[in-house]
Length: 239
Ligand code: 1GP
Image (cartoon, rainbow, N blue to C red; front, side, top):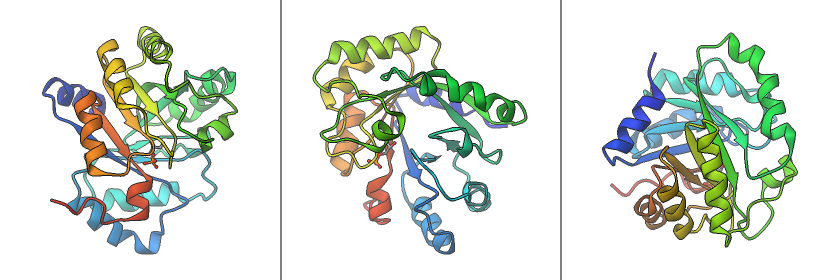
């Protein structure tokens, strides 16, 4: 079994930046998957995340199965709820939505996921998930019925991230929301990365190579790209 979290820690210690491509099973066309896989192979991606706020189709298992036939990158679930858990993945970001005050997303879904996770070989990586206000309502906000943290209140965001670390979260994820108008402010990434010791993931609304680089330079250990790659599978063809 691979050790996803240890590899993330090692990368952080070596200042090697990580890039995850987020695939939403509802948006991936399985009959065109080989083309997508070729694009992923040519990209600098180091991880694949699978999930979405709401996933309606039940093709997660098949998607992961097909990806694993052709790719060696770690495949990590990034579930909006327990129905998105697939036993075929390598690991799962076991998320708690720390920015919100909805008990369902803080602990209820996690409790409900246990019977399935018990049976799995997934590497379970506890992740403090912080939704940051990004200019308009996002799917995470709508689905979780929680308010994001104010994008100007760095102190509140830092305190929340640190509380997540104190609670034992192994990763902190700053999320602007998929397709966000405004990404997480770079100064906020800087402030949070100075505050916490665990690796920092940043995603939502990042749609240029420059923005990826600036997020890395600001202290993100892993950047997640969903929409930009979804809209243009040649997005990474710059090497
Ligand atoms: C969403 O952080 C991810 O959960 C990715 O967002 O789709 O905007 O790249 P984008």
